[in-house]
Length: 399
Picture 1 (tube, rainbow, N blue to C red):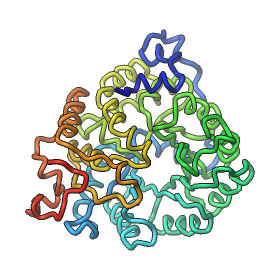
Picture 2: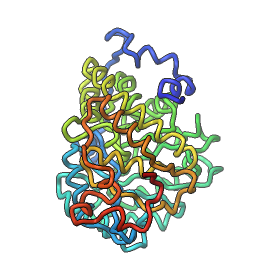
Picture 3: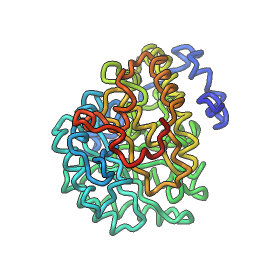
Picture 4: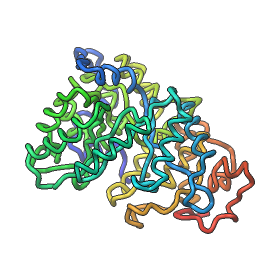
């Protein structure tokens, strides 16, 4: 079975496992703190805003699978606030730009969140003008930050890649988060180690409205370290891999991780992810190592659920939704993802659900005792009297 420890070794990081295992002394493990550039209003604001976990917001639909369930969406916004998330980013696979539901979803979230939860957007196109038009729409719906996930020609030159970034960045005063990933159009083997265009990131990090860098889950520890070396003096680097954080934070300022399903590793009553990141931000590594040990069972299981699906070009959406419901979120089965290969979305089985509950409990998290039938339709619909028999089908779900 592929475990996080195996994954670190495969990444060539086995020399660092003594540190991850807490086998180095404090004097060996700590280095002088690095200061972060706060020369622009956006960079300064990000330092106070990007703290702890930020989640990925999954939309909820009525029984027809097409109409947004506003009641359920508002419930999940309140749940995100209760989780202590610093922000949320709507997942748009089911509500693409141009679909009226795209704007409606963002406006519902913004209205319910008020000033208690930051709204993030995403640009992910390959055409600069189309991305800039989307930036205008994100400005209009009140987004605070944008994940820069645009795609480029895999054979693009360094200068042309920088120019693609520059065009979008200079079109707005909104803050941007770079996306360091391995999927097609977002990694470039000819431009840097493991496809990460470090020289371009270095140039882009100087822009005043570039405030952070999200490092996606498949990126190895070695590559994540190289990204930190390149930009952590100017950008708040956020590894999705929380088990990288205690090691990286000993050398770099690490205070947030986000735009993934943080509900997999914490509940409103026991915010393990937030506790881990807060301890690392304070350089309290005794506390960080203690929390890291507690969170590991839930984190390991989340990784095992995610890894194969991501490698196949998808995400385990029903599993991710189940995580949100276990901690008190709305739940409800997701419609079929029209933008992922069918085989890349695993079926959520009874065995899977039992294992997810067990991982929660192993980390000291208390899952809901509500029946799984409630998860199928979602808490809001369940309260309205909707039952699984009212649905046409149960996509990627096994009773």
